[in-house]
Image (cartoon, rainbow, N blue to C red; front, side, top):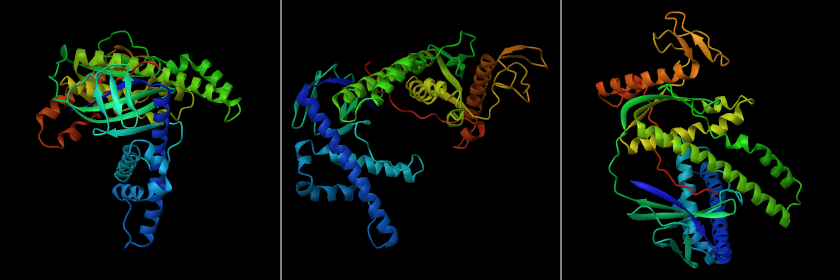
Length: 398
């Protein structure tokens, strides 16, 4: 199992300057390679006898010219530009596979980072040794034992973090306390409504709560002269607030997903069309504030670690319009209808609770059907969609 541990660093001024220069070198190498890739690809389309661009060829090309053209690259670790070009190659691989958009040029001050291979750093206790820099203090020790694969140093607001990737043995699966199932209906008024009938779980709504302060700091930044010291201070203050909003949101989602996967074995959710929902300008901010995709990502890998499963219903599944008692489907159910009565069986429903119960029924029936059929097509027949599994990266509040 590959796991990553994100740890806050405590660099001095000299070390922070080195980090900024290494991140700048990685950004320059990435942008240089992207420009070269575009030129070489255009030339290849005109003449197929020319070689197609590749990250390996671009790395060799950079190594051949950097001593004469970019001597300042030698002042930081050699893996900063090399890994940036490898990451560009991965970006193009995902683009050609249809999993991502076309790679963009990196901007200064936006996701500043550089990556080290395992032969370029060493971790001892609560410190890490980096080439040409020496030991840098970490806020905590590495939690995992195993083979250290790589480390990525990144900047969030005015703080530096290191994400250390470790190959570990698969830990023993901790089964859920309740081997039953639950349906989870996601919404804007409440983040999650459970089929158990528990009170709806409110979302953190960190962006909404701090919106006035966010607007005030944004106005303050826009009034500062570009390149001035005061503008840099205002920019750092705004970045810290954005980081705080992200941390509040992540903390709430981690607590909720951990609680659900600890309590239930099978969890049914709906495949929401978030991009389409964001087209509603009246709800776009509230929808983005809930982070539905991040909720699903965390739920998937945490359920997998406990041996559970997340069953994703198709986005056209009528969870809200179907009576969870008799199965009657209403033809029309406007979003403003929060309470309704089934015309066939007469049961009174809360819209969100009813949707959650239908998702729970769907999860159970899909799981039974999938287990009873053989072959790779069973998941498609039952409508069970696999949720992506990505390991957790721990964060420290800003």
